[in-house]
Amino acid sequence: MKTIFRAGAALAVMGMMVPAHAGTESAHSEQRAEGEEAKQAALAEAMRAADLWIEGQRQYRKIPAISAAVARGDETVWAQGFGTTDRAQTMPATPDTIYSICSISKLFTAVALMQQWEAGRVALDTPVADYLPWAQLADDPRESVPVTLRGLLTHSAGLPRESDFPYWTGPDFPFPTQDQIRAKVPSQSPLYPAATTWQYSNLGLTLVGETVEAVSREPFADYVTTNILDPLGLENTRPGIPAELHGQQLAVGWGALEADGTRPEVKLFDPAGITPAAGFSASVADLAKFARWTMRLAKTGEREVLRASTLREMQRVHYISPDWETSWGLGFSVRQENGTTVVGHGGSCPGYRSALMIAPKEEMGVAVAMNAMDDPGLLARGIAALVKARGEAKPFDPVAGVELGEYAGVYSGQPWDSDYMLIPWAGGLTWLDPDSGEPARRMWRLKPLGGDRFRVVTDKGEERDEVLFERDRAGKVRAIRQHSNTSRRLRGL
Image 1: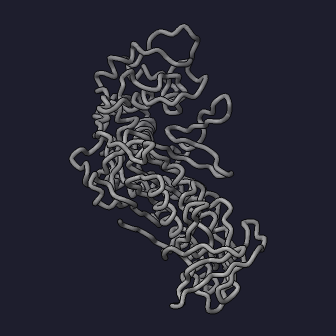
Image 2 (image 1 turned 180 degrees about the horizontal axis):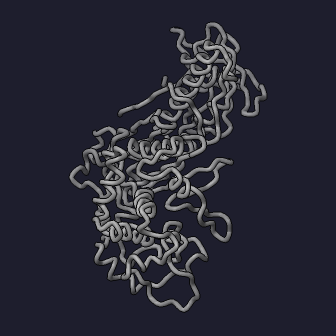
């Protein structure tokens, strides 16, 4: 298990800023130092909570391996691996573990297309058949505007979701070749007239990749590697799945959870002709680098792989569904979460799932990947929520003689609930439920009163009952007493 953590970065996650003691530019240097120290402490506690919560989620959900990373501005401030990546369950996951990132591949394909747009080789509203004469769907009697590159990038072109092959069907996952896809397209009919509704389409982004290959006159994989991956220093990202690393740096894949608590093994697949839409592999360390690039580009305004104005164009809404529930940029998902604009993409392929969430205004990115069919978006949102909650928590005044670490630990919730944790949090303690999908929901706290006494404080700041920690003869905390009942402390953290 490898950890990267730099506490010196300023903390701002999904619409939250950590309050500092230094309020103005004219504040004294001592006040500014205190403010930075407070930010560092807040980030450290939030990331420690994320460590504990993700490992708890991994164990409760029986996920073999998870890797996660947080980027702030142009720095990766935290990255961690959890569990093991091989069949024998002996090789620890790290931030550099490689996973299939499936549909996050679409971001790289979109960037490649927009490079061609910057060069004047493509126009977003020109029919895609102008670039790919073979990409003519079967005749459809319904009236429709042309299928364009903008429509493909925003999943609004009305195309079928997939090329007409059973490549999501196990155990072999028979992905088609480029030639097979090209031969099949003319026999496929549109699902909808273009620009009338949103329909996610792997076929659509595959055609975007084909367009890049056609206008650049380079094989798609070579073009992306030379013009995007290498310049960004993404050493563990590639347009394909490195079968030679399977079971080593490339995590092995597992399926959905069975009723008996096991996961079936999943055979490694070759994405072949669907690579532009779903065939890339990467580490979360590299995904964090990609997020950092988007934030660096926006901040400096200097061209790097793309122009800053082009990236802004990709990250604004270009299509919104008639029900106003789904919005999409050029390759990027674009949505609002609690008033914050979040861009990025998710990925789901046989044996692997991933998520990349970026809040451009807040200069924050979260990347999560796993080798099982579970929900990485839940983990990404949970990490962001923990950092936000810690940043918004008003610290309690310190109490002499109280060492919060003495009370931290895993406490029994039996028979009523799963075991829970008490962790240091903003000058007091807070409850952390490793089995909960929302770790920052209703984060009640314990305010130190002195000795082994604490006061419960709700998430609304209301002071409630008093609790008492009990110690054994050796002076070690052994239980917490609340409402005349005790919960045993099972172990430390």
